[in-house]
Length: 186
Image 1 (tube, rainbow, N blue to C red):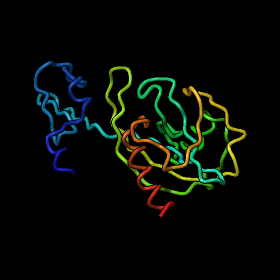
Image 2 (spheres, rainbow, N blue to C red):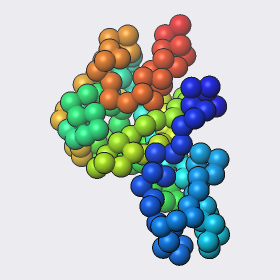
Image 3 (cartoon, rainbow, N blue to C red):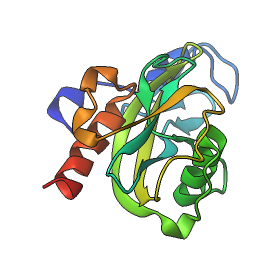
Image 4 (cartoon, helix red, strand yellow):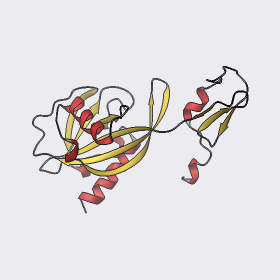
C-alpha cells in the first residue's frame, strides 16, 4: 500500500448508515479501512475492488485504437475499449466483449496478450467505485472495420507518443500507457 493511501477507507462505506443485517443505526464500525461490522448482530461486509478489463489494440502502423467517451465519467476524453467484468466472466472475455460492444471489432480471447493491472477510481451516478483494471494488448492489420458504438462519441487511432495525458479519461489508462510505451517503444 502506498503511504499516501494509508488513511483512506473504501468510498462506499460512508453510504452505510444502517446495518444491512439487523437494520440498526448504531453499532457499525469500520474494520481494516475496507469493511463494516455490526456490534449488535455480527454482520460483516467487505468492500473490494470491482474487476474491469480493456484492450490497447494496435494496428500495423503501431497506432492504438481509442474511444471518445460519450458519457460520464470522463465524457469527451479518451478511453481504451473496455469495461466492467460480468459475473463469471474472465478478464479476457470481458475485454473482447467490450471491444465488440464499443467498436464492432471481434477478437478471440486467446489473441490477447497480458499487459498490466492498474487500480482505478470510477465515479458514476454519485457512486464511487474502485476497480482493478486488467489491460491486454493485441494487434490487427487495420481499423477499417471499427465503428463507434455503445457509449462512444467516436474512435481515434493515435501513436502512443501522440496521446496526451490530459486527454485520457482514467488514471489506470495513463498508467497502462506508460507500461505499454516501455514495452513496445523502447
